Image 1 (cartoon, rainbow, N blue to C red):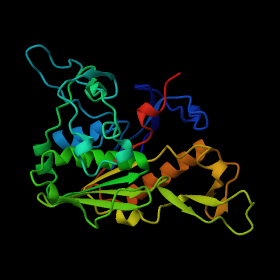
Image 2 (image 1 turned 135 degrees about the horizontal axis):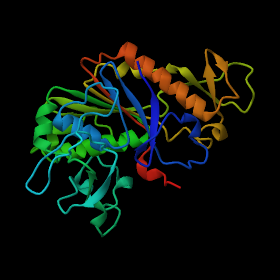
Image 3 (image 1 turned 180 degrees about the vertical axis):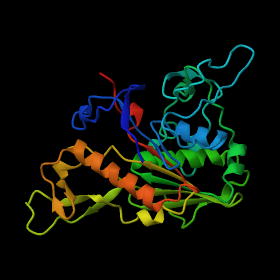
Length: 323
C-alpha cells in the first residue's frame, strides 16, 4: 500500500499538501513522490536517479528515501548521518560532460538538439548534479550495457518521456562499437504521432521502448447527450488501452503531468469521467489524484514487481520557476 502522497517544493519535502497544487497557474515548483509499495519505488524529478538505480543496484521498497550512495576519498569524508537526499544539492561545472553528442546520435530529435540547430557555445552542457551530502557514481556506459543484457526497458508518458528515452539511447550508444547494431525495430523515425517506438541493441540483446500515453488513463468519446463543450472524456478509472503492452518489462518508467492544465484539457474540450458518468465539477487537481490512484492500483494488480522495477516522475524541474 502507498502510505502517503507527498511533494517537495524546490527540493524540500513537505507534509501532505496536495490541495496547494495549482495546475492552472503553475505557481509552484514541485516534485511528486509516491512512497514505495510492494517493491515499487516511484520518484522524480530527474532521470539521473534512474541511472543511479541501474548503475548501483535497484532501489528497494522502503517508506523513506533510499539509503545513500556515499563515496569516500582523500579530500572528503562520508556523510555522517547515513542519509542522502538526492534532491538537495546543486549543479556543478564539470568539463568531462556531456555524456554524449546529440548531433551525432541518430535517435535525437533535430528540434531538441541545440548544437544541431546552430548554437555555438557548449558551456551549458558541462554541468553535473551534486547532492549536498553524498556522491553519485559517474555513469559507466560499459557497465550499464552489461547489466541490461536480455532486458526490456519501457518509457511511458508524454514528450518528456520520449526525450528521456532518446537520451538514454544516445548515452548507451556511446559504448557500442557497431552503431548499426542499434536500430528502431520497424525502421520508424521518431515523431510524436507514433504511439510505440522500440530501439534494439542487438549486440546486447535488449530493447529500450517508448509508449506515448500523455495521461496514462484512457481517453475516449463522451457519453451520448453530453454538453456540446465536451469533445473528449478522460476516463479516470481506466488505464490507457495500450497498458497491457507495458507489463512484461524489466524497468518501467512512467511520467505524466504536463498535460494536466486548463489549456490542455478544458479549453480543448477534455473533461473527466468516472464509472461512465461525466464529472463536470471535478478540478484538475482532483482528477490528477484520481488518475494516479488508478495507475497505482494497476501497478499493484498487473505488474510483477519481483521482476519489474517501476519508476514514476512528473514535471520537468526546469519547466517551472519557484516564486
